[in-house]
Image 1 (cartoon, rainbow, N blue to C red):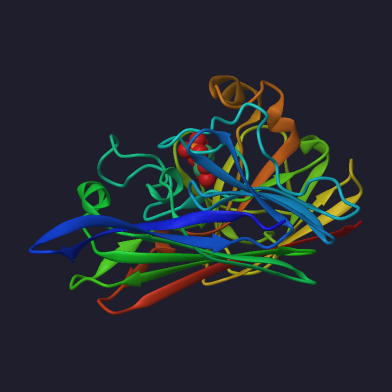
Image 2 (spheres, protein in one colour):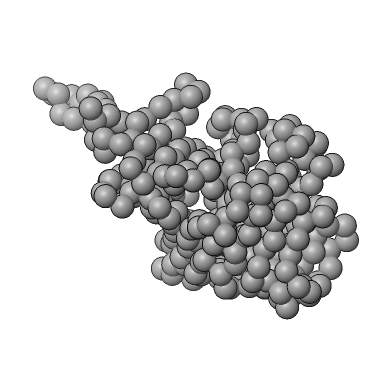
Length: 317
Ligand SMILES: O=P(O)(O)OC[C@H]1O[C@@H](O)[C@H](O)[C@@H](O)[C@@H]1O
Protein backbone atom coordinates (compact mmCIF):
# COMPACT_ATOMS: atom_id res chain seq x y z
CA UNK A 1 0.00 0.00 0.00
CA UNK A 2 1.31 3.45 -0.94
CA UNK A 3 0.87 6.36 1.49
CA UNK A 4 -0.36 9.67 0.20
CA UNK A 5 0.98 12.75 1.95
CA UNK A 6 -0.03 16.37 1.65
CA UNK A 7 2.98 18.34 0.42
CA UNK A 8 1.50 21.77 -0.24
CA UNK A 9 -1.68 23.81 0.25
CA UNK A 10 -2.22 26.85 -1.95
CA UNK A 11 -5.05 29.31 -1.35
CA UNK A 12 -6.53 30.97 -4.45
CA UNK A 13 -9.47 33.07 -5.53
CA UNK A 14 -11.87 31.73 -8.16
CA UNK A 15 -14.69 33.48 -10.00
CA UNK A 16 -18.05 32.50 -8.55
CA UNK A 17 -21.05 34.02 -10.35
CA UNK A 18 -20.61 37.78 -9.98
CA UNK A 19 -18.09 37.48 -7.13
CA UNK A 20 -15.03 35.53 -6.05
CA UNK A 21 -14.59 32.59 -3.71
CA UNK A 22 -11.51 31.59 -1.75
CA UNK A 23 -10.52 27.95 -2.15
CA UNK A 24 -7.66 25.73 -1.16
CA UNK A 25 -5.80 23.52 -3.65
CA UNK A 26 -4.11 20.59 -1.94
CA UNK A 27 -1.14 18.81 -3.54
CA UNK A 28 -0.47 15.21 -2.59
CA UNK A 29 2.58 13.02 -3.11
CA UNK A 30 2.50 9.24 -3.39
CA UNK A 31 5.28 7.79 -1.27
CA UNK A 32 7.25 4.74 -2.39
CA UNK A 33 6.02 1.46 -0.91
CA UNK A 34 9.02 1.16 1.43
CA UNK A 35 8.28 4.55 3.05
CA UNK A 36 5.62 5.21 5.67
CA UNK A 37 4.58 8.69 6.78
CA UNK A 38 4.23 8.63 10.57
CA UNK A 39 3.53 11.29 13.18
CA UNK A 40 5.24 10.26 16.42
CA UNK A 41 3.99 13.61 17.70
CA UNK A 42 0.84 15.11 16.11
CA UNK A 43 1.81 17.55 13.35
CA UNK A 44 5.45 16.31 13.29
CA UNK A 45 5.93 14.06 10.22
CA UNK A 46 8.67 11.44 10.25
CA UNK A 47 9.25 9.22 7.18
CA UNK A 48 10.08 5.67 8.21
CA UNK A 49 11.95 3.71 5.54
CA UNK A 50 12.22 -0.05 5.44
CA UNK A 51 14.21 -0.94 2.31
CA UNK A 52 16.18 -4.13 1.46
CA UNK A 53 19.45 -2.16 1.80
CA UNK A 54 18.70 -0.37 5.10
CA UNK A 55 16.25 1.10 7.59
CA UNK A 56 16.10 4.84 8.17
CA UNK A 57 14.00 7.66 9.60
CA UNK A 58 13.90 11.19 8.23
CA UNK A 59 12.02 14.08 9.87
CA UNK A 60 10.38 16.89 7.92
CA UNK A 61 11.53 19.14 10.76
CA UNK A 62 15.03 20.25 9.78
CA UNK A 63 14.90 17.82 6.80
CA UNK A 64 16.85 15.75 9.26
CA UNK A 65 18.07 12.19 8.94
CA UNK A 66 17.31 10.74 12.38
CA UNK A 67 18.44 7.14 11.95
CA UNK A 68 20.23 5.03 9.39
CA UNK A 69 20.95 1.32 9.78
CA UNK A 70 22.34 -0.43 6.70
CA UNK A 71 21.26 -4.07 6.36
CA UNK A 72 23.34 -6.33 8.60
CA UNK A 73 24.84 -3.40 10.58
CA UNK A 74 24.28 -1.77 13.93
CA UNK A 75 22.91 1.80 13.64
CA UNK A 76 25.49 4.11 12.05
CA UNK A 77 23.72 7.32 13.02
CA UNK A 78 23.12 8.00 16.72
CA UNK A 79 19.77 9.34 17.91
CA UNK A 80 19.46 10.28 21.57
CA UNK A 81 16.71 8.26 23.29
CA UNK A 82 15.79 11.55 25.01
CA UNK A 83 15.57 13.60 21.78
CA UNK A 84 12.63 16.01 21.82
CA UNK A 85 10.41 16.21 18.73
CA UNK A 86 9.00 19.72 18.86
CA UNK A 87 8.89 22.54 16.34
CA UNK A 88 11.67 25.04 17.08
CA UNK A 89 13.79 22.54 19.05
CA UNK A 90 16.76 20.80 17.43
CA UNK A 91 16.63 16.99 17.39
CA UNK A 92 19.55 15.63 19.47
CA UNK A 93 21.18 13.17 17.12
CA UNK A 94 20.85 12.24 13.46
CA UNK A 95 22.31 14.66 10.93
CA UNK A 96 21.16 18.20 11.83
CA UNK A 97 21.67 20.81 9.11
CA UNK A 98 23.38 23.78 10.73
CA UNK A 99 22.84 26.89 8.63
CA UNK A 100 23.37 29.87 8.00
CA UNK A 101 25.83 30.12 10.87
CA UNK A 102 27.85 27.51 12.71
CA UNK A 103 27.57 27.27 16.50
CA UNK A 104 26.83 30.59 18.29
CA UNK A 105 25.80 33.53 16.09
CA UNK A 106 28.98 35.63 15.59
CA UNK A 107 27.52 38.89 16.99
CA UNK A 108 24.20 38.13 18.70
CA UNK A 109 24.20 35.42 21.37
CA UNK A 110 20.39 35.60 21.64
CA UNK A 111 20.04 33.99 18.21
CA UNK A 112 19.74 30.18 18.02
CA UNK A 113 22.88 28.06 18.10
CA UNK A 114 23.70 26.63 14.64
CA UNK A 115 21.16 28.83 12.84
CA UNK A 116 17.52 28.12 12.08
CA UNK A 117 17.51 25.51 9.28
CA UNK A 118 17.44 22.65 11.80
CA UNK A 119 14.49 24.04 13.77
CA UNK A 120 11.91 24.59 11.02
CA UNK A 121 9.65 22.35 8.99
CA UNK A 122 10.90 22.01 5.41
CA UNK A 123 8.87 21.26 2.29
CA UNK A 124 9.03 17.72 0.85
CA UNK A 125 9.65 18.16 -2.89
CA UNK A 126 10.52 14.65 -4.14
CA UNK A 127 10.76 11.10 -2.85
CA UNK A 128 11.55 8.03 -4.93
CA UNK A 129 12.88 4.53 -4.34
CA UNK A 130 15.00 2.21 -6.46
CA UNK A 131 17.01 -0.98 -5.84
CA UNK A 132 19.89 1.02 -4.31
CA UNK A 133 17.77 2.94 -1.78
CA UNK A 134 15.62 6.03 -1.38
CA UNK A 135 16.18 9.58 -2.61
CA UNK A 136 14.45 12.51 -0.95
CA UNK A 137 14.52 16.21 -1.72
CA UNK A 138 13.43 18.93 0.71
CA UNK A 139 13.27 22.71 0.20
CA UNK A 140 13.31 25.73 2.49
CA UNK A 141 13.02 29.37 1.42
CA UNK A 142 13.37 32.65 3.27
CA UNK A 143 10.21 34.18 4.73
CA UNK A 144 9.34 36.94 7.21
CA UNK A 145 10.42 34.79 10.16
CA UNK A 146 13.84 33.85 8.73
CA UNK A 147 14.39 37.47 7.68
CA UNK A 148 13.91 38.59 11.28
CA UNK A 149 16.83 36.33 12.24
CA UNK A 150 18.91 36.76 9.09
CA UNK A 151 17.89 39.45 6.63
CA UNK A 152 18.69 37.75 3.30
CA UNK A 153 16.72 36.09 0.53
CA UNK A 154 17.67 32.47 -0.04
CA UNK A 155 16.52 29.07 -1.24
CA UNK A 156 17.88 25.88 0.30
CA UNK A 157 17.58 22.38 -1.12
CA UNK A 158 18.75 19.22 0.59
CA UNK A 159 19.06 15.93 -1.27
CA UNK A 160 19.24 12.85 0.95
CA UNK A 161 20.16 9.53 -0.63
CA UNK A 162 20.00 6.64 1.74
CA UNK A 163 20.95 3.05 0.96
CA UNK A 164 24.13 1.08 1.76
CA UNK A 165 25.73 4.55 1.87
CA UNK A 166 24.25 7.81 3.23
CA UNK A 167 24.66 10.94 1.14
CA UNK A 168 23.47 14.39 2.30
CA UNK A 169 23.87 17.34 -0.04
CA UNK A 170 22.86 20.88 0.95
CA UNK A 171 22.59 23.53 -1.74
CA UNK A 172 22.37 27.24 -0.89
CA UNK A 173 21.08 29.67 -3.50
CA UNK A 174 21.25 33.43 -3.13
CA UNK A 175 18.07 34.65 -4.84
CA UNK A 176 18.27 38.16 -3.40
CA UNK A 177 20.21 41.24 -4.43
CA UNK A 178 22.75 41.30 -1.60
CA UNK A 179 25.82 39.12 -1.12
CA UNK A 180 25.72 36.97 2.02
CA UNK A 181 28.19 34.89 4.03
CA UNK A 182 27.26 31.50 5.48
CA UNK A 183 28.66 29.11 8.04
CA UNK A 184 27.23 25.59 7.91
CA UNK A 185 27.61 21.98 8.99
CA UNK A 186 26.19 18.58 8.18
CA UNK A 187 26.38 17.68 11.86
CA UNK A 188 26.50 13.87 11.73
CA UNK A 189 26.18 12.07 15.08
CA UNK A 190 28.02 8.79 14.38
CA UNK A 191 27.07 5.83 16.56
CA UNK A 192 30.00 4.04 18.24
CA UNK A 193 30.26 1.19 20.72
CA UNK A 194 32.44 3.09 23.22
CA UNK A 195 33.96 6.52 22.62
CA UNK A 196 37.07 5.71 24.69
CA UNK A 197 37.93 3.04 22.09
CA UNK A 198 37.52 5.33 19.09
CA UNK A 199 40.27 6.83 16.94
CA UNK A 200 39.64 9.40 14.20
CA UNK A 201 42.23 9.14 11.43
CA UNK A 202 43.01 11.67 8.71
CA UNK A 203 43.50 14.74 10.90
CA UNK A 204 47.17 14.30 11.92
CA UNK A 205 49.16 17.46 11.16
CA UNK A 206 46.05 19.60 10.59
CA UNK A 207 45.58 22.95 12.30
CA UNK A 208 42.44 23.31 14.38
CA UNK A 209 40.58 25.78 16.54
CA UNK A 210 40.19 24.18 19.94
CA UNK A 211 37.09 25.62 21.60
CA UNK A 212 37.31 23.74 24.88
CA UNK A 213 38.21 26.46 27.40
CA UNK A 214 39.77 29.60 25.93
CA UNK A 215 39.60 29.16 22.12
CA UNK A 216 43.08 28.66 20.63
CA UNK A 217 44.67 27.41 17.40
CA UNK A 218 46.60 24.14 17.72
CA UNK A 219 48.06 21.43 15.48
CA UNK A 220 46.91 17.80 15.64
CA UNK A 221 49.74 15.49 16.68
CA UNK A 222 49.04 11.84 15.83
CA UNK A 223 45.53 10.45 15.45
CA UNK A 224 42.67 11.83 17.49
CA UNK A 225 41.54 9.82 20.53
CA UNK A 226 38.90 10.74 23.10
CA UNK A 227 39.89 11.15 26.73
CA UNK A 228 37.69 14.12 27.62
CA UNK A 229 35.56 16.80 25.98
CA UNK A 230 36.50 17.45 22.34
CA UNK A 231 35.19 20.47 20.40
CA UNK A 232 37.42 21.28 17.44
CA UNK A 233 37.22 22.90 14.04
CA UNK A 234 39.92 21.37 11.83
CA UNK A 235 41.15 23.01 8.65
CA UNK A 236 40.47 19.93 6.59
CA UNK A 237 38.81 19.29 3.23
CA UNK A 238 39.72 15.60 3.05
CA UNK A 239 38.14 12.28 4.02
CA UNK A 240 38.44 11.10 7.62
CA UNK A 241 37.69 7.71 9.14
CA UNK A 242 36.30 6.78 12.54
CA UNK A 243 37.78 3.51 13.84
CA UNK A 244 35.54 1.95 16.44
CA UNK A 245 37.33 -0.93 18.17
CA UNK A 246 34.31 -1.86 20.33
CA UNK A 247 32.12 -2.56 17.30
CA UNK A 248 35.09 -3.59 15.06
CA UNK A 249 34.12 -1.27 12.25
CA UNK A 250 35.17 1.85 10.37
CA UNK A 251 32.93 4.75 9.41
CA UNK A 252 34.25 6.79 6.50
CA UNK A 253 33.19 10.41 6.11
CA UNK A 254 34.04 11.87 2.72
CA UNK A 255 32.85 15.25 1.58
CA UNK A 256 33.01 18.11 -0.90
CA UNK A 257 32.40 21.88 -0.68
CA UNK A 258 33.69 21.83 2.89
CA UNK A 259 36.89 23.35 4.27
CA UNK A 260 36.26 22.52 7.93
CA UNK A 261 35.86 19.21 9.71
CA UNK A 262 34.32 19.65 13.13
CA UNK A 263 34.74 16.95 15.76
CA UNK A 264 32.62 17.09 18.90
CA UNK A 265 32.00 14.96 21.94
CA UNK A 266 30.63 16.68 25.07
CA UNK A 267 32.01 14.09 27.53
CA UNK A 268 30.40 13.40 30.91
CA UNK A 269 30.01 16.83 32.51
CA UNK A 270 28.55 18.63 29.47
CA UNK A 271 26.37 15.61 28.64
CA UNK A 272 24.93 15.94 32.15
CA UNK A 273 23.90 19.50 31.30
CA UNK A 274 22.04 18.46 28.12
CA UNK A 275 18.49 17.51 29.09
CA UNK A 276 17.92 15.69 25.77
CA UNK A 277 20.92 13.35 26.17
CA UNK A 278 21.23 10.54 28.76
CA UNK A 279 24.11 11.01 31.21
CA UNK A 280 26.13 8.24 29.56
CA UNK A 281 24.93 9.11 26.01
CA UNK A 282 28.27 10.74 25.19
CA UNK A 283 29.91 7.29 25.24
CA UNK A 284 27.90 6.19 22.22
CA UNK A 285 28.58 8.82 19.57
CA UNK A 286 31.17 11.12 18.05
CA UNK A 287 30.18 13.99 15.79
CA UNK A 288 32.30 14.35 12.67
CA UNK A 289 30.87 17.16 10.60
CA UNK A 290 31.49 18.36 7.06
CA UNK A 291 31.40 22.09 7.77
CA UNK A 292 32.42 25.58 6.74
CA UNK A 293 33.45 27.72 9.70
CA UNK A 294 36.16 30.26 10.58
CA UNK A 295 38.45 30.76 7.56
CA UNK A 296 36.19 28.52 5.42
CA UNK A 297 33.04 30.66 5.71
CA UNK A 298 31.40 30.88 2.28
CA UNK A 299 30.49 34.11 0.46
CA UNK A 300 27.52 33.64 -1.89
CA UNK A 301 26.95 36.52 -4.36
CA UNK A 302 23.49 37.43 -5.72
CA UNK A 303 22.47 34.69 -8.17
CA UNK A 304 25.24 32.44 -6.80
CA UNK A 305 25.04 28.98 -5.27
CA UNK A 306 27.12 26.82 -2.97
CA UNK A 307 26.92 23.06 -2.37
CA UNK A 308 28.26 21.09 0.58
CA UNK A 309 28.01 17.32 0.62
CA UNK A 310 28.92 14.48 2.94
CA UNK A 311 28.99 10.76 2.16
CA UNK A 312 29.03 8.29 5.05
CA UNK A 313 29.93 4.64 4.56
CA UNK A 314 30.60 1.80 6.99
CA UNK A 315 32.77 -1.31 6.73
CA UNK A 316 34.30 -3.96 9.01
CA UNK A 317 37.67 -3.07 10.60
O1 LIG B 1 23.78 21.69 21.49
P1 LIG B 1 23.91 22.08 20.03
O2 LIG B 1 23.46 23.49 19.75
O3 LIG B 1 23.22 21.06 19.14
O4 LIG B 1 25.43 22.04 19.68
C1 LIG B 1 26.18 20.90 19.91
C2 LIG B 1 27.64 21.11 19.57
O5 LIG B 1 27.77 21.18 18.16
C3 LIG B 1 29.12 21.16 17.72
O6 LIG B 1 29.15 21.17 16.34
C4 LIG B 1 29.85 22.36 18.27
O7 LIG B 1 31.19 22.31 17.87
C5 LIG B 1 29.72 22.40 19.79
O8 LIG B 1 30.32 23.57 20.29
C6 LIG B 1 28.26 22.35 20.20
O9 LIG B 1 28.17 22.29 21.61
